[in-house]
Image (cartoon, rainbow, N blue to C red):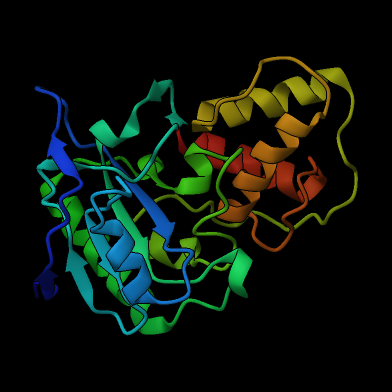
Length: 242
């Protein structure tokens, strides 16, 4: 069954570069008080921001930009050695006021529509599981969305994105601080897709990237620490990206 989609064009779009294949989907939350405010901003020429889709709290879906066209949603971003991710990605804005405005749970109907929309995108474009990411994954120094309350695990169970199976929760103990182990942490994050320096201590930059990883793959402990539970989940996700 095709997901019902209402058209409401945004002027903030242009042509994708010639020969650029769509191989990413980036999920966002709107981060505004209401859906109406968010949609108005995404359609405001002065704002110069947009997305391909908006999924409302009741599960209704708007298309603001055709998939064949480039929307302005990722901004300064990086994933798996690539930048300028708007060129190759589809952006989905999920209506939620975000961390700054209470950050409520995502309603079930909304999550179902996001999943159905992603599955339809997969039927049209060859997007690897590792390339279904959040805005915080590709811009961890600027963004937190869609955040730790988004059901990435449920999405993966339905065939969208990655979620490591049967990884025990080893808790928040045993934070890694020695140089050799931190080198392995950095290598695993880079293998998944994050931009990290290959060497260094557990500095603020690494903690920021670890928080982004945890928001996606370890939402029960968004600490920015390389603890035992995070390491187990990190290595499992890295193996899934091979």
